[in-house]
Length: 307
Image 1 (cartoon, rainbow, N blue to C red):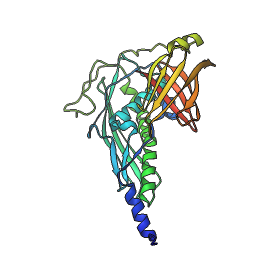
Image 2 (cartoon, one colour):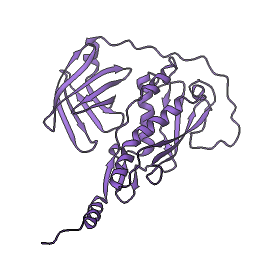
Image 3 (cartoon, one colour):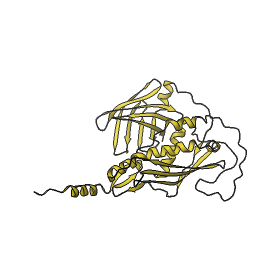
Image 4 (tube, rainbow, N blue to C red):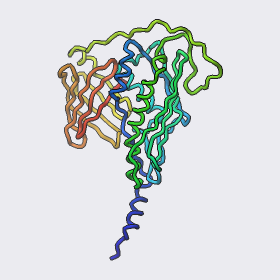
């Protein structure tokens, strides 16, 4: 009986990987970004849909291994938009309506695994008050000679690269000016300015009401309904009696269900995962969203918005 030579076996293994897709991780908030945004307490902003130089694109070929794709196959511009939405919501700045609207245009989102492995991102942000900024991020990650390992590193690094881009934007010295209410309305971030923009003096800040932490009874009455994670890969249904069901498309098809209770002012949902392991969600109310963590064999930060 003949055996394959090592070189032949390696080649066949590599060929077997062709055509596979590797999903990046869902976006998670970054503490430094939240701290930076909360320094603008009292401001409120609405997000307009983001655009892109390559609209609708959601995956990139990695060597000959397969495609690196966003969770759930959402377009890259939507993934970045949802990242900003998540950070703004947790920081308490997201509102609708709001005196200021931000739009974004994703000029570049690409990675390389040749030489220095890195994600390259470039984003233009425009405010309805006429001001705009452009930020770029070159996020490096571990390089590997083998394609499978290199591409998995690229997929793992996508979410942190977007975190770094968002952090770069909110720390930009001109970012506070984007949040100032004004009379002048800008073109979307994708449109190039053809003439200097005349900016009206900023109006007095519109102070958003501070939402107190809800009482136990309020949270029990407020939480039931249909929810979806900021990245779009998780859905959660909470019933009036706090029975719940959960589904996820991140890295496969998963589900779970159980019963909930209010504990220490938070919503604690305990139950079983479809893999026959225990799971739980510990969530708190932040404005109009539920923020917390999903616990299975690992712990994942998660944010739910009401559908």
